[in-house]
Length: 291
Length: 308
Image (cartoon, rainbow over all chains, first blue to last red; front, side, top):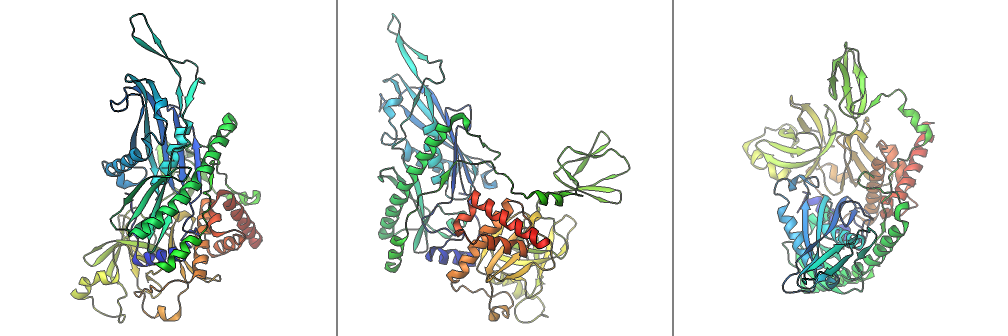
């Protein structure tokens, strides 16, 4: 993970600030930095989104390809995740430096998003046992300024919302062989229901309290954090502890409660924003990467 | 633990602020454009002159006998030498510059300090004030105890003593105002935005002190009391900073980020005016683009009125 070095006195300053519920940037313990979301950024994907949270910048692209269903779930499609840690984000990622973090992130993404409770995988099936849609979700880290998980999860949800999968028609010839025909009309497409896709909330234990959306400096003061994925109903679908330190059961309980509350509050503004962006359609000025 | 618990529940969860990105426009007052007059700004590829009588300096190259800019910046001419001083750059230190830096390595008789220059700067053991008197020989014990004074990760304020031939800086802290920094907040900005002034240490009237390092590192800290100053710069207080001081520091931090996002030169007056203009807003809201724009606009107006 990209890290920063800070001195003892700075740590003490941050710790006392969190204790007083006034963080270095003036936020309270449960405040997010303001988040900017833009979808439909990359034309050669089926769905894409860019999220910036403070100076954290994440780009997610979703590509749909036809593949063979997994033997364990013959009537379902599936998702593949790949996280690319660009050396643009931090020089630490140069060469193979980002591989470890990339694998760690994509493993967590499989657990959080790649199951039937988050997406209707059955709708990705074309013909059971033979053909299904495989969604390749590629995450590119453009800049790291803490709280990667939350930014990635929001970007994935936005990209999945933005994903347009072309409709297919199955036809059978005389010999009983099946033929797949892709619709020519670019507007004749299937959308995914992202209602149940969870968002991830990372809670960092700083001193005796915990904060959401920790910056790199705050992260450097914390020994352990909890990654919680929460759906719009407030159901927790996945909890993971990262970092070397330990958490006592009581604080885990407190953190999950906070995570639930904060996570639930993330969905409504995100969906509102995505619908608004879509309703604007082509009228909206695209900002892209140079804004 | 239990006393903190009640405080946790007390905080009201706020819906996250999500929005579409907007194309960032620079806040500028029409009159402030006149400041550009008389300055020769170029972008890479611009032909500066086709006169062959000039010498090629930094930031330029010869393209078909024409002197062309290789960086975006301001053209500077010294006799026959033409240079382009880039707007976005790392710190090019000069003797006497005040810098804020972070110790990255402890070596034999020297510390390596990160100062946003192209190369790490050095702080020699012989150019610091050791506790216990000005005139003292640096013994082998002092060399062994170097980590007791400055550790990896520690922040220091220092002055550039000399510049090596490769451009690396040699620093010194031989004054009571320099030395190790205690509790506070570091902000890393562009060195081009720091206005050169007589003093870069300011005790602002809002109850906080600021060090505007020439290298773009800005240090905000609560104004120290008298007893701290006598300890010679190596004593750091780990006593909690009061909430009111914290609020001022956080507000100033966000103001500095707002000013730098809109490319306003930073010096005590601009910082103070921005602080005053931000008062109607909550500290955490200052970083929102629309609030930032408004605050910077008001600051610019105040600065213009002051200039007359």
